[in-house]
Amino acid sequence: MENRSSFTGKLGFVLAAAGSAVGLGNIWRFPYLAAKYGGGIFLLVYLILAVTFGFSLMVAEIALGRKTGLSAIGAFNKLNKKFKFVGVIAAIIPIIIFPYYSVIGGWVTKYLAVFVSGGAKAAANDSYFTDFIAKPAEPLVWFAVFIGITAVVVMLGVEKGVEKVSKLMMPILVILTLFIAIYGLFIPGAMEGFLYYITPDFSHFSATTVLAAMGQLFYSMSLAMGIMITYGSYMKKDVNLESSVHQIEIFDTGIAFLAGMMIIPSVFAFSGGDEAALGKGPGLMFITLPKVFDSMPGGSIIGAAFFLLVLFAALTSAISLMETIVSIFEDKLNFGRKKTCLLVLAGTFILGIPSSLGFGVLGNISVLGLSILDMFDFVSNSVLMPIVAFLTCIFIGYVLKPQAIIDELEVSAPFKAKKLFTVIIKYVAPVFIVLILISSILDVLGIFKI
Ligand code: TRP
Image (tube, rainbow, N blue to C red; front, side, top):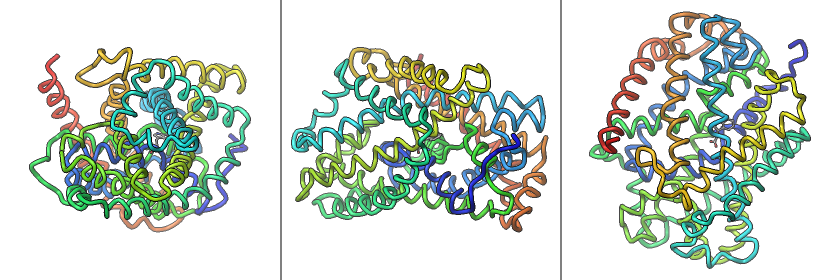
């Protein structure tokens, strides 16, 4: 690893980490989960978890990477051979996520094409989205287009170019999202939805709410899967790690909040306040936003611009996911980069097929009441990630000891939140994660009875 390249400075680091973090998780996943799990109460739980768990875990992962100069598997292995398996489980998670992430990426690509080709009116139709995903071939074609683009970028190694473009597009995305969100608030009936989104209603609170919020937090911040360890390994020693983490979190959470503000009030407006419309799940963004665009003057152009920007955010995340998977296999297989890329591409396509067909041909298959795509999402975000997070806390809290992480941070600047960090990593997070995992598994089993 003598030639490990590093980010030029703090801004470079924060932007790169934020580029990986901000993606479909913020724009597509956060709003539908918030809608489904009680609006304000989900938002509140999410925010509390972000500043406690999210903060501590991100600090821990980045510090592990910077301390060892290695990616997940190597980092755990170097510090303690017995904990290498944590790195291995972490490395499996992107392999589960990438295929279904790209299926959704394909839907975004399709919507961009629809808006560009003047189909905005049709897309605002109630059944447009469900009809589309129920088709056998078309979603697969868009899925292939999306991973194809991702693979070309990874293979040619032109990420830097894409990153430059996305640095330009990300601010435009924020402004456009803000504009759509504010516009949406003026649609009659939307205010009620906005209140639902920001007012916590404790009667909607359950263990599943917390598990969903925790899974979303890990997912959105690209935690508990080794990615941040890798990013940390590229971070220079003189960059202030603590304040970098604050900035990444504010960026990531801010965009998620805006996306929810853009989607949830509009769902209320267009469903006439019918709460059942909130449970639409993965399709929420694709069903609601076209209606908003349809009601706007110039909506088809704004819609096209919007889906283009979302596609970019999705691509930058997908590129970083694929890059991770390729580098894992590259180390293990020694096939060379091109071959490994093609192998990962083919494998991902095959793994993604069931997720894509799960809304049509394979629609009668459900696991614990979840569609195939939701099932992969559940296994990675609500089962494996909490397990990795738990093991990471145990490792740092009791094997490596928090002081090692604190020392790593204090190479650059005093660690202001070190007490909070220590208490969370040693006591709060492990106990809490176990309780939440157990109670929500019982919940799922109880509700769906297998
Ligand atoms: N955080 C990304 C998002 O919000 C999704 C994601 C999860 C991801 N794990 C990742 C992106 C790993 C890049 C690398 O969309």
